[in-house]
Length: 375
Image (tube, rainbow, N blue to C red):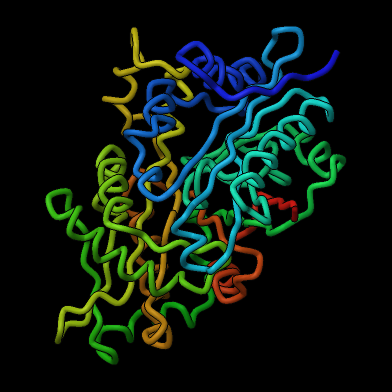
């Protein structure tokens, strides 16, 4: 029977959109159910800061009235204005193991974007690169961490069968406190020289100053990441939203800024997050009746972290401050209940960061692939 793809209209469709991955993956032990109320808020165009500079449409695919797939099509106007392009994206991709379903979903997203003047479609991303993005192509035997998707192996196979082309691979590196002895000795030497030689000192963010510190992070991010593939600068509205999200998982041990002692200029930052997926796994997508208890007791269940952002302003990349941030992470792992985790994603083309992970004794444990279609 043919596949019918239509835009999401009304609450019943939105519920079906959110519920689909629960039906597709609920029986797999490695899939982590998202919190349904959070997904509903995230998809709300009035509440998500992404829509301050973007537009999107949500689609459901049905066969004989049964939901068999979903997709979004979105245009990030900030990205296009910054790069001078007419690119669109697709995301929130879920589908049964059927090339006809995926072809119909991609066709709907393609048509929506092309009608608005876009010339290329890149994804999946939900909605942006700093949200969940990519299709898992390696690491199927590992649980996803905070803001990491999990997909069964057929996703990659079917996406390539229907003609999507690789755009970029994203790496996740595993680091354990026990790996400290594998770190190159030069990293410790560079870290020790940061303060006496370059006058740079680390400080930890605080919950009270978090919003102000995120402005500092935004300045560093917009400098350090600006040459990255698919970079979009953070706006005030983006940082406001990030502050609200970060408050829920804030841990002072893992949020840090490097500053010049003489002027107070922030030159580098790192934001690392406890893996709240270890709690979501127990909540099964719901706050009620007992999900909220797991969240209140979340520190009891979490022993992993994800290094989400670690960046240095270009003019300070010779100072060894990145090594200082790396060593501080190992020190915190030795001193707290969090004994390891993952760093990334890191672009496959980011040779300096990937070499840095190797120097720390890291190992690539997951790979995600971004795809594209040129119209």
